[in-house]
Length: 503
Image 1 (cartoon, one colour):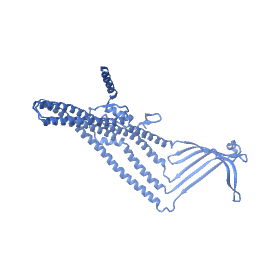
Image 2 (spheres, rainbow, N blue to C red):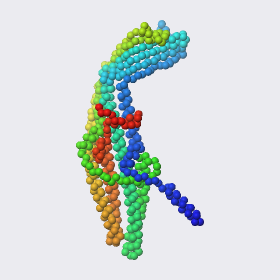
Image 3 (cartoon, one colour):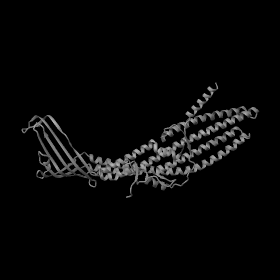
């Protein structure tokens, strides 16, 4: 029987050990670092940064020479087809032939004038299988130029907008990572507040258990009343219920934080509150200037204006559609031998000039209306940007003012916590000595709990405002560090960040 009891106790102990969770101690800095590495928002920011890099690479590639190989190889036909005769009639003839062509060209765009220059060599081959005949014809060398007239030069506008869009993507990445830090800090303090609530609730449950036992003793000797005893018992039950609810809240918020920072293992998180609150002064004008220099939104204002101007210019240019193309080169006559295409006595110079135009004579006022629409859209863009600028500056102003107020609040909250703790210690001692009643003790405990919570919430507001300022300005006023460096550029080819040379 004793062996059975010992074995049962051993199994119970092993079960308790197996179900106990590992504890992970984390600071605010560690939580933020994990969020930057593992959170979905960080991964999204990295993907958008890479997208911005490749989009800008596409733009740059358009300005480089393009070597193209194109053709139709083979183009085989074996069927009955209609053939127009000399007298205009149509006769159906069975053909068994192949037409193949191949072209190699080097093309370069001149972005200053939107001119396309290309150098080409072409080769065509015809096979008539029924007649056992084969012919070659080609253009050994040719140069051609194409020039739109009166049209908007897209490269002129792309030169203004594409670098801005790329720079905007780089700044957006830094802003997104700062927003990730802010979210991680918010989740950190939400859990920290609940852990503090759980700690308070457990302490209150233990304290109320002690008070209930004291009141029982006093009631038994006739120095306390039944209603006071029932009151202490009710407070004990309430504190025990609060402790259970606080435990559930801690588990829920712990899961939310673990999911955000990418902790897949089921561990209990123990958070260490950052008590070193730095006090520093922030000037509004300085913060606003950092925001203008670093924020992606400020570049977006410029892009909106440029795109509106481009739309107006395009609307005005669409009235005329004129283009000029010219080509010059050497082409060969038909030959039965491939080498004959490139023989000098079988080639001759050839040229071509073409002027294409499409000019509306009467369009019912369409072009004028199109220009007016573009101009009104430009005005609307200006109004929108101006309002966004006001909102932009108000955000900075509110953030600076809010941070200054929180600095004052956190000082008051810390002082209030110290006073409330000292008062509770004194009141608790006086209660145990029988000098104050239970209501006075409960009031002191409530004040103490509220002061502790207020200080933790003040810490949360401080760090939330701190990371809000970092996100809005991309500047760390606490450490006097610029968070964005325009010379740093991410290269997805090597998965590394490199520093470009200054222009």
